[in-house]
Image 1 (tube, one colour):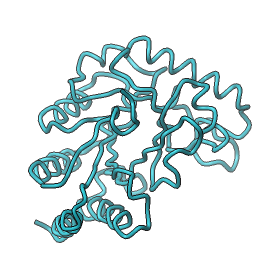
Image 2 (image 1 turned 180 degrees about the vertical axis):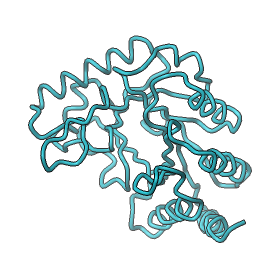
Image 3 (image 1 turned 180 degrees about the horizontal axis):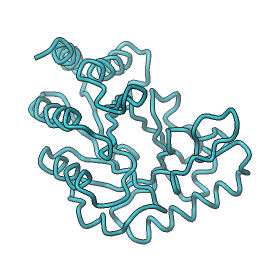
Image 4 (image 1 turned 120 degrees about the vertical axis):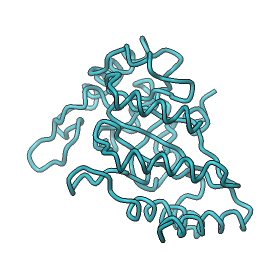
Length: 253
């Protein structure tokens, strides 16, 4: 194994020696159609017995994708239409500063209702904003729009950023978005996981937030697929480690 794999094993060992359980979770973004990549993703989740939070774009989704989801996959909501509405000077976002809060809430609620109508009990009302960006003013409006949870990227500053909203983020992105959109590499990905685990263990990050792995099946190259397979196989028998599903993460019964 490379040095990064050894460093991950060492960090897991520190948690185990401290009598603490390592909690991981897995989110995949941009799902819309039951294409070969999505079929492969769901099959990997089932084979590895690792629960998958599949972030689906409601207004661009083909309901037939439900046919490829196994028992390990739960649907959550990824934006409304995943369209970049950023104004001048703004980073990519579906929720620009010029859009009023009532208009944004109406879009969110309508998209949630559409997704729930065909996903039914396969979905949990957790919101994943495209590009992981959501104006803070809208976080408090998620409950009126029908959501109980929020997931972005990076260590959370609060487990409950607004009344009734539980936040659980991802921390390890497999894709090198600014360097060709291929696999970011074992060293970079594993080091990101080790950093978050160490920060939690040392009290520099919320120790109660499970470490989240983020994938994007539609852009995976073979290196990314191979890494996921190796990750799940390597951690399969690791003592003191749990992969959490959406219901447990967001306290949904």
